[in-house]
Image (cartoon, rainbow, N blue to C red; front, side, top):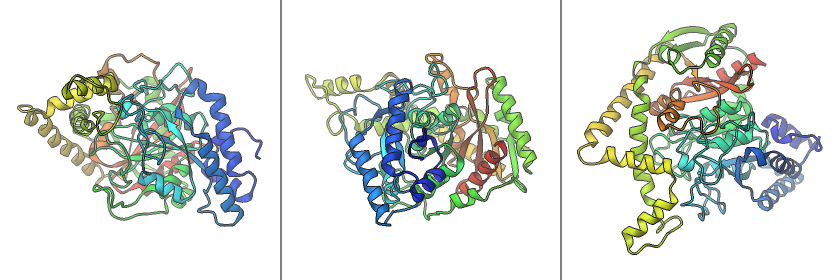
Length: 484
């Protein structure tokens, strides 16, 4: 099996079986991933950097542990990609920004430490929209990333590199971050599974903050079980993160393996998500088919209302930009980043941040600073927080009549590069994902169809209440099984 192509594209269960049986070694698996990157990533450009020597050394160390029957877990030796805003000790941490290009992390993020503790091997820095601000991966200061299914189209964002690498079968799994849909939207575009956990269930320690009350790390994987395996490893309380929720579970993957049907599950269809003018015919048809499949699998379908959803995009772009304005103030070239000298301190700030930040980052900092400024705080920021509470209450009311919600992930399939030149058009790409972040609940994108004529992937989104990842993952796994 060691000579088989696309070991890098196999689910974690198959890779674990192969490693445990001796069918191939970790070094052979890593070399297969490197070969896939060499063969395909010239067109996709999902990676910013791969430290081949360190990756091969880590794989060799895993093989030595297995030889001594001292493996850290059944997944010991499996590589995973890392979005370039998550800290890995000794590796770059640039957030795909010129300003942080020289920065290397002095420590591991909690999620990285937990995966390393099970023997997973960090494999490369994955491209993203600069500081996670974007929906297409066109805002990276390094290079744009392409959709592996059509190189003329975007992979989505901001975790575009992570989704493209998994969708292109360059790497088995990857970590992304989701502030307004940045795991789920690119996963839908690239035909893979993307899990956005409950806010606080996965530590943000070591994640470069965009909007601290919205950011959440999660897995991008080829199948639901693989996503559950990674979630098993990374979830749980962390004293290094003040927003971390108590408790830890580790049986999500086993629950997923036993999922067979949706019998007894009540699924709500939010009226507001299906009446959007921007919903394409192909996505609408795919959603109808997804609803029919859920019924076939035994689910009861009910209609629900989320009346404040129409305010979600506006609320998000007030709150997220306000938090970004505060979080990015630290990147001034003095404490962090690439400093440009000026004639005085203020001039140095202007030159450093002017040259270091891209256009979208500057746009969001300006907007965030404006809504926090004197005279506008009450009119914008405070009012947006109140509407956020109403959005959260909508989800709470819906959960009283259904177990899960089912919605589209994106209004359309992956669009072409430079097709959305108007920022507002780009912001509306996340219209079906943003409300979930504002509510703090969990959601998952699962492939459900391909678009006729283009064969571009279409994803369906399942949404569950906070801390209900087991219910969410088992339903997604049953749906996935029903499609196979």
